[in-house]
Length: 150
Image (tube, rainbow, N blue to C red; front, side, top):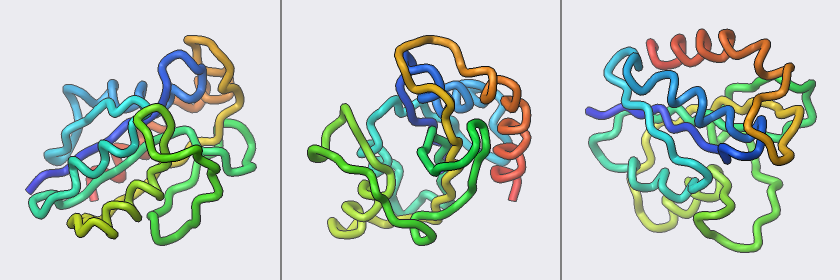
């Protein structure tokens, strides 16, 4: 059985890179048989990991949730509804929830998916995390370790 930590985001858009940074942290040290994957901004690639041998997927991404910057929520695709406006499905903009729904419609085997959404402070062009997310980085690592250990 396979387990995946999928990091999403844009490396040149400040806090939008948080999912990629966290996945990168786990490239060589992911616990409990997880494989960490940098998916960049292509949420449709999630479907590649939706196969009968996949036991669990944890997704980490920057998510606008109207929380204080740096706060995070843990949820499943069944817990929430996407309000993101997309011009269409592409590899340049994405929505994990819509990718999961598309997978269901196409008959993919959808394993249990847990999403760690982190509220950004800044998604403008830049290569550094905001102070708000940078200050909580180790907390995100601890939470991902916990999620991958259950």
